[in-house]
Length: 273
Image 1: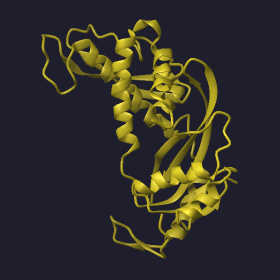
Image 2: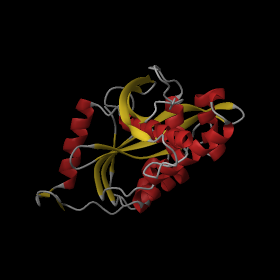
Image 3: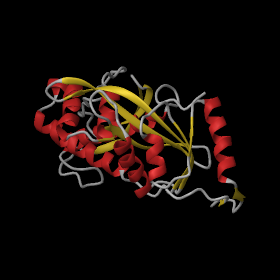
Image 4: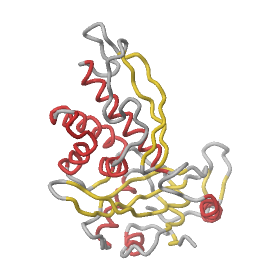
């Protein structure tokens, strides 16, 4: 991350604005409107929709025997989608459920007439977080699907969704984020045993005031991450194109301020009050 410059050109309007002043304004707006992880408008809602729809498409591929945009080998084929709202731990999520021509597709992750899903928050975070093994991720899928789907099918669905989420996790970021919030959630991780693990979520506020999840990282069992962990997180964000941040807002994350200095950023540390 480069040292903050005094001004930046808006790529849309061509206007030169002061980065630090913009950061202060957007921080105040964010505090007033809230930057919630869950609930209506929560930043995890869109990510949850993406995970569920990717898993549903993978289920349809298993059902029909050919991938989306491929050629149907038989008479049955994809036939658009239908919208459905489900209630999860993250809040209400609207998903587009794929349909097939003869109506024989019976989705499992979002079953017909099912309105409430459990374990989705753990599934979504495990799929998108750096630092979990494939076994830990697959265990979450097995928990969601249960005995209704074979292990081979779960494995193929898992691989498909991991591929999609890996692409999302590696996508390029904006050059400048006026404000970055770093928040934490404690999630139960399964892989032979159940244990609590902290997940750290970096949420960037763009120059247009939009909220974007920059990444999710799994911490160590019991937490207590230090400067080395945060240096890895910040270096990854930098390598994906985010060269500068105005203000980083967090609550007592040990080692984070030192790591911000180490990567060469002039970002200020703010608080939520």
